[in-house]
Length: 71
Image (cartoon, rainbow, N blue to C red):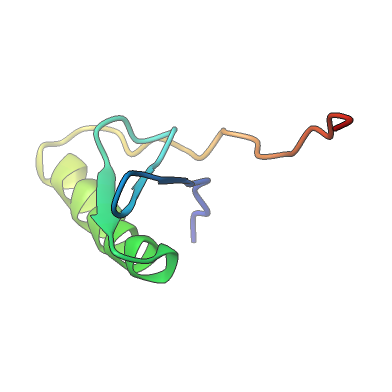
Protein backbone atom coordinates (compact mmCIF):
# COMPACT_ATOMS: atom_id res chain seq x y z
CA UNK A 1 0.00 0.00 0.00
CA UNK A 2 1.29 3.43 -0.96
CA UNK A 3 0.08 6.72 0.51
CA UNK A 4 0.45 9.75 -1.77
CA UNK A 5 0.04 13.36 -0.65
CA UNK A 6 -2.55 15.32 -2.61
CA UNK A 7 -3.27 19.03 -2.93
CA UNK A 8 -6.85 20.26 -3.35
CA UNK A 9 -7.37 23.88 -4.38
CA UNK A 10 -10.50 25.99 -4.77
CA UNK A 11 -10.97 27.23 -8.33
CA UNK A 12 -13.53 29.78 -9.56
CA UNK A 13 -16.45 27.37 -9.78
CA UNK A 14 -15.08 24.00 -8.66
CA UNK A 15 -12.11 22.31 -7.01
CA UNK A 16 -8.92 21.00 -8.59
CA UNK A 17 -6.41 18.55 -7.18
CA UNK A 18 -3.01 17.10 -8.04
CA UNK A 19 -0.44 14.66 -6.71
CA UNK A 20 3.04 16.22 -6.26
CA UNK A 21 4.76 12.82 -6.60
CA UNK A 22 2.88 11.94 -9.80
CA UNK A 23 3.32 14.79 -12.31
CA UNK A 24 0.34 15.08 -14.63
CA UNK A 25 -2.03 13.26 -12.31
CA UNK A 26 -4.87 15.72 -11.77
CA UNK A 27 -8.64 15.81 -11.23
CA UNK A 28 -11.47 18.27 -10.73
CA UNK A 29 -14.87 18.14 -9.08
CA UNK A 30 -17.77 20.21 -7.82
CA UNK A 31 -16.92 19.49 -4.16
CA UNK A 32 -13.81 18.54 -2.21
CA UNK A 33 -15.19 15.03 -1.68
CA UNK A 34 -15.96 14.58 -5.38
CA UNK A 35 -12.53 15.91 -6.32
CA UNK A 36 -10.81 13.51 -3.92
CA UNK A 37 -12.82 10.60 -5.36
CA UNK A 38 -11.94 11.62 -8.91
CA UNK A 39 -8.28 11.94 -7.94
CA UNK A 40 -8.31 8.49 -6.31
CA UNK A 41 -9.48 7.06 -9.64
CA UNK A 42 -6.94 9.15 -11.55
CA UNK A 43 -4.11 7.87 -9.35
CA UNK A 44 -5.13 4.25 -9.97
CA UNK A 45 -5.26 4.84 -13.74
CA UNK A 46 -1.98 6.76 -13.70
CA UNK A 47 -0.16 3.99 -11.81
CA UNK A 48 -1.64 1.32 -14.07
CA UNK A 49 -0.41 3.26 -17.11
CA UNK A 50 3.10 3.55 -15.67
CA UNK A 51 3.20 -0.21 -15.05
CA UNK A 52 1.85 -1.02 -18.52
CA UNK A 53 4.53 1.20 -20.06
CA UNK A 54 7.24 -0.55 -18.03
CA UNK A 55 8.04 2.60 -16.08
CA UNK A 56 8.87 2.86 -12.39
CA UNK A 57 6.07 3.77 -10.02
CA UNK A 58 7.43 6.62 -7.89
CA UNK A 59 7.54 6.08 -4.16
CA UNK A 60 5.65 8.72 -2.21
CA UNK A 61 8.12 11.33 -0.99
CA UNK A 62 6.19 14.57 -0.48
CA UNK A 63 5.70 15.86 3.04
CA UNK A 64 2.57 17.79 3.95
CA UNK A 65 2.45 20.28 6.79
CA UNK A 66 1.02 23.66 7.71
CA UNK A 67 2.74 26.89 8.72
CA UNK A 68 0.95 29.27 11.05
CA UNK A 69 1.29 32.97 10.31
CA UNK A 70 0.00 35.66 12.68
CA UNK A 71 -3.04 37.46 11.29
